[in-house]
Image 1 (cartoon, rainbow, N blue to C red):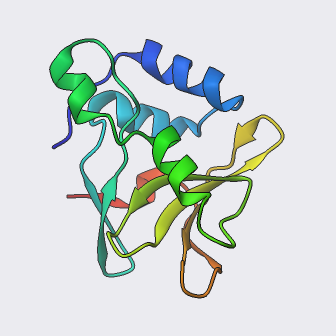
Image 2 (image 1 turned 90 degrees about the vertical axis):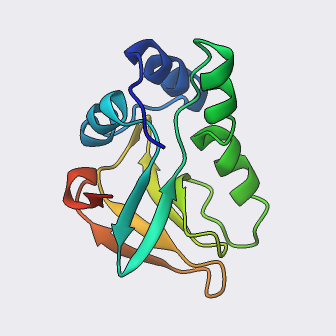
Length: 130
């Protein structure tokens, strides 16, 4: 279930990551933090940005992008410069790749089976939110 997000939590997330998130993704998360997207014929559950404004939101965002990226890094071959923003429930992730102190706009599917990245969109707004 998607819900709005205060920008201060995006700023906190970026500080912890040490990198800026793509603007199209930031804007989308402000109005719908979480939810689902449809990419490459598959439904993907978006990992939210951690929101500690109240107990309900803490509970709803405990699977946030930083914790899910840390979990994904345990997979052999997960790119060290990747940020996991969604999962299909089968071990694959939708990721942004980092260049210096910024995550690039392009979205990729990282396959846990092949350990390969496949570009699926030039920016977040190209994917349809369900």
